[in-house]
Image (cartoon, rainbow, N blue to C red):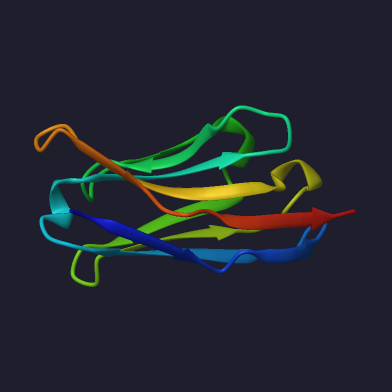
Length: 117
């Protein structure tokens, strides 16, 4: 069982920055792909960034060069540094842990990010 707790959302102005954090409790953290998703008003949830078990990190095109995902297996945390924020980045951001080996998937409760113009 893994529990994910996000923090760090809030309000930012156009061009500003926010840093999201996700702390995971439980075991075998290293076996999980960790990802950040977001869901804007009236939109479907979309993948923003994914880290493959501490290896490669991939981003959707719209955030490349602006967002950076970090992972610390020792602390069992992931973070998402968001720079040059745009109003279209406004969404509820969710931390996700998925293990194909353990065949399990977990979601955090979500944290709201609002970017004003």
